[in-house]
Amino acid sequence: MTSQYFESIQLIERLHRYFLDVVKTELDRKGLQDINNVQAMILHNIGRDEMTVGELTLRGYYLGSNVSYNVKKMTENGYITQERSVHDKRSIRVKLTPKGAGLCKILDEMFMKHEDKLKSIGIENPDLVDLNHTMKQLERFWASQTSFTGLASLDDSDF
Image (cartoon, rainbow, N blue to C red; front, side, top):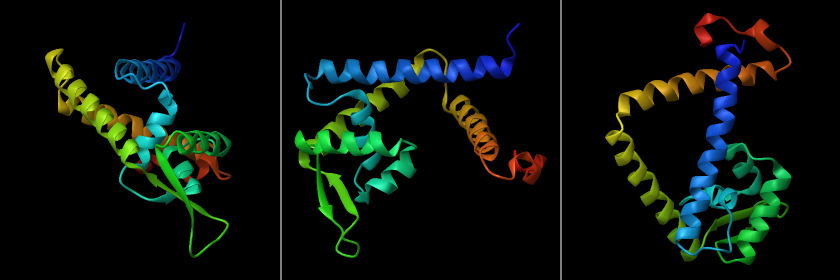
């Protein structure tokens, strides 16, 4: 018998893969062959900001080596630019080009279209608020499991 907890973990994994498939389908529909779904989501996480690769790694919870490779590919394909930080020559700042901003807009439009479709199947904003609350609780719980103090530092008020 599968526990609800384990079933939730499997569902989160499966949903993530489905979502990346949805992004890939949208890229294909728009004829964008020079960027993949993961790169598109990294690009979307950069948005209108300018940040270092390290900040992007922290913000998007990506693995550093994967971000570096994907940033290189997105730079080669004209979606982002890279500049050395004037304050720290070891640090590279990235930002979207007009081509990258155009793709970001396509993704924003896709998200808005999806929100409208969710309403038509009975998933309303309060449902998503509850879902997000639960996922944030899981995120805090899992983060606490990787700390040196573990659960010993947590009490029920943290969740």
